Length: 358
Ligand SMILES: Cc1cc2nc3c(=O)[nH]c(=O)nc-3n(C[C@H](O)[C@H](O)[C@H](O)COP(=O)(O)OP(=O)(O)OC[C@H]3O[C@@H](n4cnc5c(N)ncnc54)[C@H](O)[C@@H]3O)c2cc1C
Image 1 (cartoon, rainbow, N blue to C red):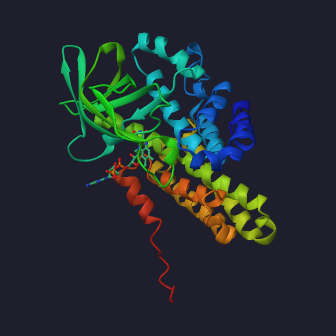
Image 2: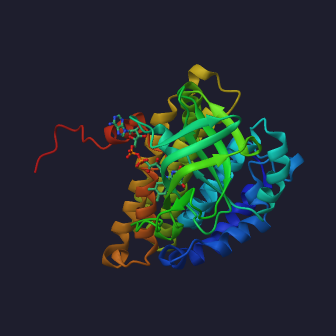
Image 3: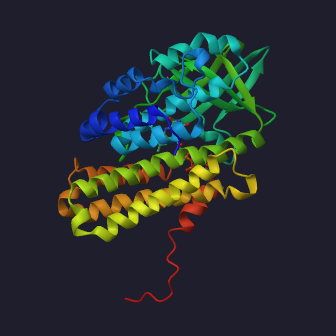
């Protein structure tokens, strides 16, 4: 396990501040502003920002451990939070030094919040959001189908596809205008309070001062592999949250095998993810990132389902922690989905034991 006090801090905030407020946050009409402010106070919003811009410059595994801790306490907070730290990671890797100097210190401090709108790049078929050039400017036309944190985020990392197939990424201020219009927030079964909208761009002009980068499809595919490892944190966080609830409900006395088995499985999958993320691990010994993520998705859903079963009828109550974790674990099976991840996730759902009979 990486030795870092910030992980301990994330765990303390998760158990003492986020978890007690999680049911209310889940049912709220608005994103969890107070929770994000608490994370900002602790320096968590600058986790993926280098120290010279006021951030923590944390390693990828420290970032994962912190995100998992936050997800074990409150899925909604983790959901809104990861948009910000992912956006900051992309901006920190940009060669647009002026933009970094202007934006990253405020993003690290949490006085500016960032969201994302690029998952559509992974969809096959005609791009829903296209970009053309006009001199040095980029012009965005079309729809980004998903963006979380409308009214909370100040900026969005928006990406569309250029005529040559590369994607163009820009940091765009979030304000409703003729050129940029948000849909009403989607009604969702999980993360309903995340203020998730679609963004329609009508000849949205973005000047070079706001350009973050371009990526070839191959570079995007390689970033998606890394994303799969990053997103294991959400599912492992839900699994740990479920085991935590099982313990607090007394299930470890009643069903000791269940709690021990889940604990062991979480530790083993976590170790496999850490091994993948360890720069010292030779590439051919890392294992397949997509399969690892699928295993985490499967584990998160099963652990939360176990908590629901132990919770009994009461677990169907809308504020019960077990079914909230179950809904959260479910949505983590869709986030940053790719064709391969979808296939790997479904493969684990196929019952292979021919001996089962009614
Ligand atoms: C509550 C919520 C909030 C979200 N917030 C954000 C956000 O803030 N920013 C953001 O960028 N994204 C966000 N997303 C999107 C999310 O990360 C996933 O990308 C998305 O849920 C996957 O579904 P989709 O509708 O984008 O893609 P789908 O069209 O459902 O496709 C999913 C994947 O399956 C594969 N696939 C689909 N159709 C085919 C086909 N015909 N042939 C081969 N393969 C195919 C593709 O690889 C594709 O990537 C959010 C999603 C949800 C549910």
